[in-house]
Every structure is written in structure tokens, then in C-alpha cells.
Image 1 (spheres, rainbow, N blue to C red):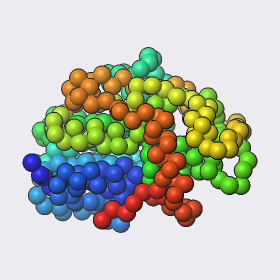
Image 2: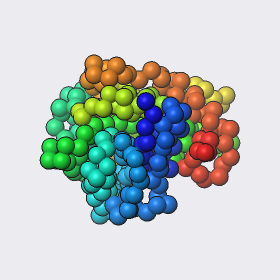
Image 3: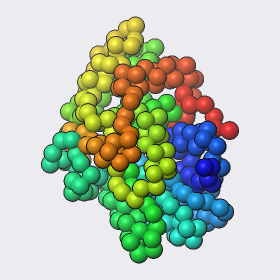
Image 4: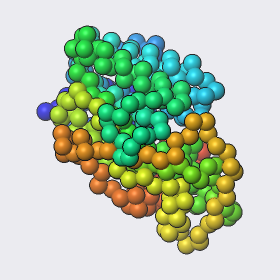
Length: 298
């Protein structure tokens, strides 16, 4: 069944992939982008919407330490604004949250693990989740919450780790690949696998909370080794020694619930995902665009 679906943050990394996937399924897609104003204050006047994928957010963790107010405004008040729209439209919602567990007490990390704000960005996402649950309880809004650990893929801004590593590896100027802190290990999920999870949630209309990850943690050194394995000339690694505040050193997602309830699990290996990113970035011009390696949405 085709529907009219609103995607907030439709011009972002995940949003562009999601819009293409939804349109490919025949859905009518309404898009809210940054050109329409900050989601916290935007007038959402879309008609006929039956479901909202709420992706609009400030996401770059280091900026949340220097500009926390902007993160709370966009991520918390923006979510309430979208929930109010859902209440008016009687629409369901999928809230794309984030990793919100802090330093994990166990690995892999299940959804029932206590949430802990280890930076202002994570705190804003925890509050956004609380708003979604409150609207579900008090106003009957059907709201699923998805907690992606580390999504990567073509079109991701080079402010983020994997595209930054790949761009350095592809640079013809040579030199070592520069990283900050080599200690953290992360759970990386390829963007098309994440989009498939979102599509499963649209189909199932769940009101639960789900982790999104591969279930495995990978170190920065392992990432660089894999990237180097695809290149004709391998590069060494240099570390700046910069350590982020409240750094979490190891994470891996427990994704059993997503499999048991939605029959979803990641199918793209890290090797395959990195290969696709390298091919996309190598073929794209060095224009400084966050959309490098991603075809335009039409």
C-alpha cells in the first residue's frame, strides 16, 4: 500500500537515502529540509501524511559541547513540534535517535540498558525519546524509536570518521592518515542496511525501541587496515593524541530484538561497505560537498 510520508531532515545523509528508497516503493514523499527552517519552529502544513520519519537533528558531537543550546532546541523542541504534527494528522512516527548508553555495562548493548548522557548531543536525544514516549502514552501517537550506533556510507560528511579516513587515504599528496584517539571501538552499520530497517518499521508499525548496528565492534586501526587493503599504496597512521570528553571506548549493538520482531539484520559486511564508499569517493570531485559520492535526489 502506498502512503504519503513526511521525512524531516530529508536533505541529510540518511534522509537522502531514505527518500530515494521510499519513492522507489511508490510512496508519495513530503520533505522537510533545512531550507524550510529549523524543525523546532517550522510550520508543518503537509496534508494527508500517515507516517513521519523524523531525522532532522543536529548530530556532530563535538559541536554539542560548544553550542549545547542549539542541540537542545533542534533535537528536543524539534521532536515535540513533529509530535504535535503527528497528533494533528493522526500519523505514526519513527524517531531516529542515537547511541544513548554511555560507557556500556555489558557488550553487546541491549535496548534495556540504562541510558546515560555522555555528551549534550546524547542528552538531547534521550529527551527527544522521552517526549515521544510521553506523546505515545498521553495522546496515543504510535512512535517507534531507532537507535543507530554508527551509520556510514556514500554521501556522508567528511567531518565523520570513515569518510575522513577514506579521503586521507585517497589523497594523492601522500603522507600518513591522521587520527585523533586510536583507542575507541565502534559498531559500524552500512546506510542501505539502516534504510532497510526503517522500511521494515514502516511495514510493521511498531511502537518499540530498537538498536541498529552490525553487532560487532571495530577499532580505528582495523578500519585503516581495511581501507589500506583496497589501495595500491598503503599509508601509515599518525595520532594527534586528542581525546574527546567522556569518550566511550567500546560499543557493540545487541540487535536480537530487530531480528526477532522485524526479521532484520545487517547484511553488508564492513569490507563491502568500505569498498563501495571508496569507489564512490574516488569517482567524485574534490568540491568539499557533504554530498560527495551521492547522486542528486530528483
